[in-house]
Image 1 (cartoon, one colour):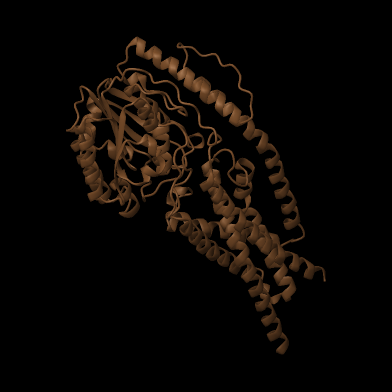
Image 2 (tube, helix red, strand yellow):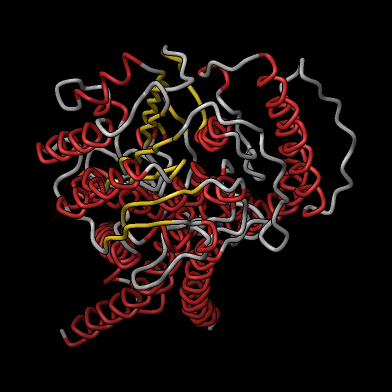
Amino acid sequence: MKKYRWVLLGIVSLLAVAGMSYFWATGLMDSLYAYRSPLSSSPVAAGRPLGEPVSRRVVMILVDALRVDTAANAALMPTLNQLRAAGASATVHSRTPSYSFQGWTTLLTGGWQELSDGPAMNPAEGESAWTWTQDNVFSAVHATGMKNAYAGTHYFTEVIPAAALDASFIVESETIENDALSAAEAVKFIQSGEYAFVLLHINQVDWAGHHEGGPRDPRWNEAATRADALIAQVLAALDLSQDTIMIVSDHGQIDAGGHGGQDAIVLVEPFVMAGAAVRPGAYGDIDQTDVAPTITTLLGANLPAVSQGHALSGMLNLSETQLLTLTQASILQQKTLYEAYSRAMNVEPVEIQSSPDHFPVTIYQSAMENIKTGRLNSERIPRLILAGMIVLALGFFLFKNHGQTLGWMLASTAIYLAVFHLIYGLLQGRTYSLSSVLSSGDIINTAALDTALALIIAWLVLFTALRLATLPPLQATHTHLAFTGIALLIVALPALWGFAWNGAIVTWTLPEMASTFLAFLSILQLLIMAAVGLLLTGLTSLLSFLYQRNGRSK
């Protein structure tokens, strides 16, 4: 009778795990897609323009997904590398989630994803992104009375405030032909002489990465060379004694194609700037947040209000007066941002001492980071305690009273883990990051198949090793359920760590993405393991029953 109650409890527990895992997985992803900055409801006020432009025009060419190694290959991209030799260059560092909308937002607001209020994830198929709520390059240029223009896919016009965009040429699909049309239209914008800031978005490199084999496929190189030819076409329309050209990327791609995660290659991008006011040289490493304030500095517009980066004054030929003006403007912009963030975090801002002899961005961003870290730590401690108590309590409950069978249960769990990761990581070549996730259906189907196969193999090992068929049905079922519970607990460890470190869902800040992905993968496994475990519970009981009946009939 006691074993009957334990079997019933085990079945109910598997149903509960399946239900909880489903709601946790969907809740986590929904909250990531829905994430909004703490500043979303109260946009930070823009400051005053810096004054006279130091460049007549800035043309920014965004080559989507261009990797640093591809950009540095002079055989593939001769024009870009001629500009690199004649101008300023650096390696840009970005953050996760490393998707296009996030890169675009950071490049043009100067704010990292958690503050800039751009989408934290690329919108799902058939959905649109919300418009930027925070100050950005287009808004800053427009506010001075200068005009701006954009040429490229329609995605950008979803996020750029309509009132801030003076002219646009939109294509609906990411094709070679549409890139050529966009570049030709960007040249027309330049030749008209009306526009101080022109953004050209080139998509075919990203397309090659996603749909034509990734950066190791020859078609990727061909796309990069075509993009370079479009750069040359735009360059021919500029006078670099008066104009400035800037070539950037929003993210890299893994070798197999894809981005979005924390993989090192997707978090670095090329940066090349040449022309008026540019001081040539190789400048090492910069942040993606440095691009927007550099553009507005060149054009004499205000520093974007949510900018967390430095205007790259070291790359520019600025007078002492211009440098002083820039530093004073940076102090005011950072002070305003810090105070707005403090209010959003319900923290009383303190007076921070800064002067032209200091680095205001570093000082104020450090203060903002301290506010964030303090709140995170206060939330993490109770979650860590709760997660630890769950592991200890369930571990004690599951591991006791199994004697000789415990060794085989642990060995079968190890087999499950080995088979799952062999299939997922080695055979399928997937990364433990968002970069190899093609869609929600892709990761769900992959996890379901890999989990089911691995669990069935582990169950077969346990069933054979312990000869479960020879045991009475209730005992065999109880043993199988104990193994399933132990396997679930061990597989749940990344999910529990993700809960402790980041919370169950995304709320006021973006999570650490490596642990979040591992937690999500763990939750998907729990869902499938519970469902398949229920089926194997019935199969174990049936096989034991048939064996016992056949034995009695003999």
